[in-house]
Length: 411
Image (spheres, rainbow, N blue to C red):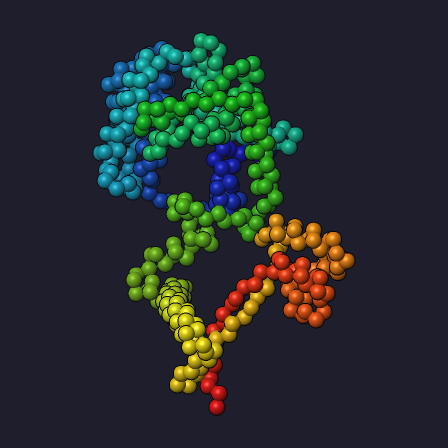
């Protein structure tokens, strides 16, 4: 039986290649130092789990007792190689922050009698598609039920960003769990989903309709179908490059990050001489040179255009069509262009012209002609009936075009 989780489905949606490494190839990872964000969040969860565990037993701990338990859990689990990447933060500051947010949660929810805790870390295992043996599994931080019969799914977050209500109304995780508990307890009528953002002292609550839950299930099954289509061939799992790539556990294997991962560990002299680095640097240098040349060409084109304008003015004053230099001469030609109205550029005039032509015997001859064909016809007056020429003349727009060229002097 195939079993999926919210994180497994989201992993594929975020980057199929990462899904391949984690769940298909199951690449072994070198043991890396723990991250403070994960440690911090886990310890806050542990403290609140202990708190509600006591409440479930009928004991309401004091705030002091809760913070003492948080300190004990922190000290028992702390390891000196845990990485802290956030600038300005230290283990002491993180621990103080934990004291603060756990204490503030205590103050906001004491005496914890808004609902009865059904279970802590409740595992939910449920069918997404029983016929195809596709199941889903997850764990609810706290599952509770209030006096009105409303069930509550609680989740604790230590994110540094507070999402919007709209964000959480689209968040699928707790909605999956709602599908699960409704299968486990079919008589449930109302469910509320709660995300507690501990750093901000904010709780965002959301509900889902039956249709939304059906859509969520179908979306999940669609993603699972996409996973099945990929099979077990690495090349069928697309690589999705995002800002999260620098946090991925599989940078050493991924074709997007593997070269950077490898060369970043080299001494500077070996880094500069690594073949790939040298090629990219050479290409970059040539692109910069080309950009500089293109900028120079643009400046020269502007200067040429200014000279051409000055030559036209000079030729008009001198009534000349050729202006000579030492070895070359500029030619100035005045070309008369005839244009007729079209539907796209002058519909009103085009309509008038068509109406007048339709009243003549010439309509069959000109109705299939576009403006270019009409212009060509106009250039040969000997082939035009005088009456047709008089009609066309009303709508002919004469434009003057000046062309400037340069050529070697005639010997």
